Image 1 (cartoon, rainbow, N blue to C red):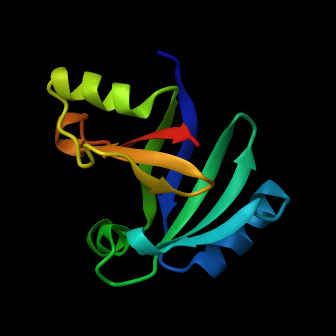
Image 2: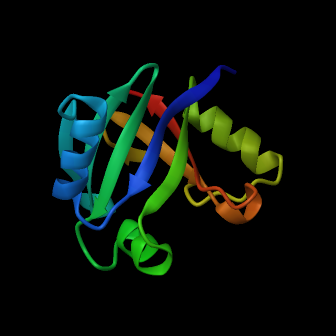
Length: 133
């Protein structure tokens, strides 16, 4: 199974301010800005070579990203790995004893299917698995 780094998710308090900062640093505007209502998150996507940077702001105080920022402050939220077959990869990880947050893929940003592995079984790092639709 082919796996590669898809993107780094960075949680922020204010998406507008973060877009300004990353636009200045990367010398370009985001490729896309979208809201994913079922995850209660707003996302700005920047291309960065073969990888992307996704800037995340919770759109509700009870979103996972808002809770992350309230508890830990802004910073790296997750690493996303692109896989060829998300369902098979989830099955493989589950058999290997990796605790999954999502056992069934759900919709993600940029027309993808995603699922998360729990940080308690991934050395403290929130890992997102992603498959292009």
